[in-house]
Amino acid sequence: GIEKLENGSKSDQMLAKMLIDDRKWRTLFSEIRSKIEHGGLSLGNIKYRHQKEDVTAYIPMINGVEIDQVVTILEKNVFEFVEYLIVHMVDKNLKDPFCIVRIPKDKRDPSLPQKYKISIKGAPFKIY
Image (cartoon, rainbow, N blue to C red; front, top):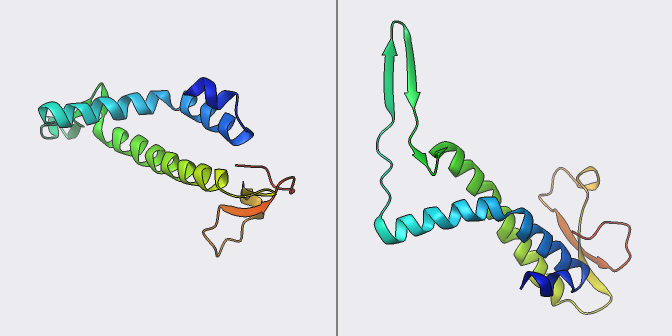
């Protein structure tokens, strides 16, 4: 499927690039999902070590990554991935000459949570 996307429209090519670039977090996500579905996932408790006045916390790990980092990585990337797919699908279903563009951060209204807008192809904003 990647090859087909790489040879498609600009938005298809950008999706292909995202899928290739995001392989690392998607692999981690797939491994965790598989562990949960097929064997259950037990992280154990946070362990603490006391040395004199210092306390060190040992955070449970999944695939060598501390669980708090796993959650941060997946939360950020899964939401961005889903958002990107939705934008991509909507863009593919717009009729010419319309497309979806990502509004550059410096051009966004801080009072609105809007990152994308419908525009006409060739508009001054970069396609997502």
